[in-house]
Length: 205
Image (cartoon, rainbow, N blue to C red; front, side, top):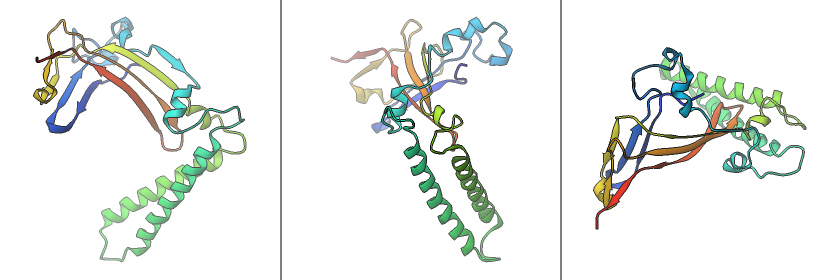
């Protein structure tokens, strides 16, 4: 399960932008994953490690690992309270709409938001209880870790003069990244990502 497409970009103050892509098949950058019959071609891009209950993933979203039956219930209770507040604000806006004064598109957008909040609240109510449901709780600790070189030719190095040196972009200059994704939140279908980009750098003396 490689991340595809992969193009990392880091932006900072003073217009500094550093980025590079990494195609699944560096020899054929435009080739799509479903066009690659030999998975060994993109094996380097597959996760190096899986963890179903990683402390780092839980701590990243503010959960403390404990020996209790459920360290997750307070998380979903706070999320439920937040969703109820957001739902209330949307319903207030809907109630304030007057025929002929509010556009159909605006009202339709509010109804979509309302439906989304109601659905997420339903999921929390149905799948959390005194004992954490497998459907939600066991996803918060998930973690998959990747580590690979960046071999693409789409390279961005803007504003590098502010860094006091030069970033090397030759064919033999190694760019490398390591990152993990996890902490999947069952009611929002969101996740968490953390990692780093290592680039070859020559300081100007």
